[in-house]
Length: 70
Image (cartoon, rainbow, N blue to C red):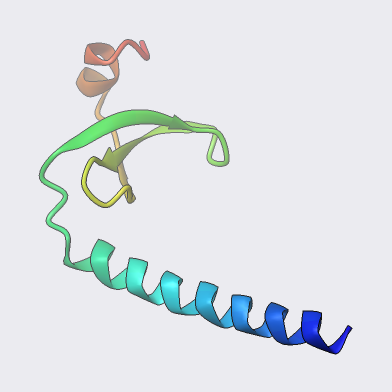
C-alpha cells in the first residue's frame, strides 16, 4: 500500500504542475481564432479558443445564428 500512496502523491503533484502550465499557456494566448461550442457544464454555448481550448466568452446572437444555435 505504501508504494501506491507514493504514486498517488506523485500523480497529484504532476497534475498540479500541468494545471499551472496550462494556466500560463491560456493566459498568454491571444485567442484570435475560436469556435462556438456548447459547454454542458454551463448549459450554454461559449467561445472556445482553437489554440488553447479556453472557454473565454459568450457568443453574440449573430454568432449563435451563424453557427446554427438559433
